[in-house]
Image (cartoon, rainbow, N blue to C red; front, side, top):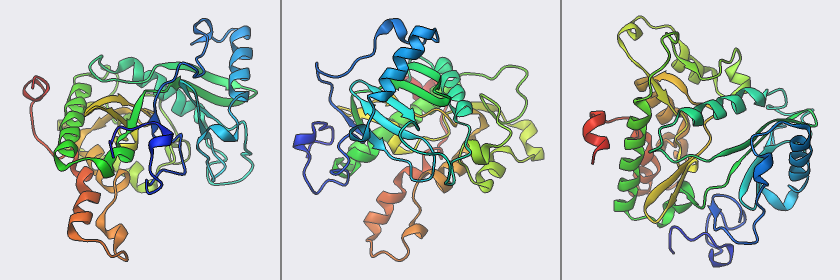
Length: 301
């Protein structure tokens, strides 16, 4: 099958995401819902009423992801992605106490810093509607890399790793303000284990005080470059999404977090009969940060 096929009617029943037609695939149509430009990035009373009406259009038929842990759901409504908990309850579950406003502010701040060479979605609204945190962003046409992955050749997979590494380097050309002296999200968070849904081990890796850090350089990092956050089309990366974990971090620490928490490890499949080739494919994205190349040489290729 064409890895970049995004029309639901052309997806075979054997596809891993066949039962989730809105997940990871978007082929624009003239009939798609499109938000009114006059209300984009506006918090006037009229705009808030408009966006309240928009999220009310997001019903169970629009689910991209339904959060089972008391947190926020993700919806696809035509040309937009909506993150909201208006259909569920936050009274119970592991994520019921999560403050999404911090992650949303971080995402907005990150996208404003990203170099123009790195494609990102446009944020259309971020704020509270009916007392709940909502963020609305552009839905990028294409296919998520994890969705396309089973249909890609080894050459295509290698190309996407190279493209992603170039974007990591391009992000690293953005330098932190002189006031930033230690690792931090763009929007500081006193309780990232709850508000960013990270483990204590990940938090210790990113933020622990180690003396050798004095000689290392903080970099602008996306910090969640798993394949589901990379949108591809026609052998090119056309979008990097979900910037809630972005910040000023040390390269090697983000590399450790990526290999341990963002990608599969063969130990996770110890009880499953998989060939060595299948195991290597599962781990292929885990060494994304394990390369040494100068910004100038790699980004100019």
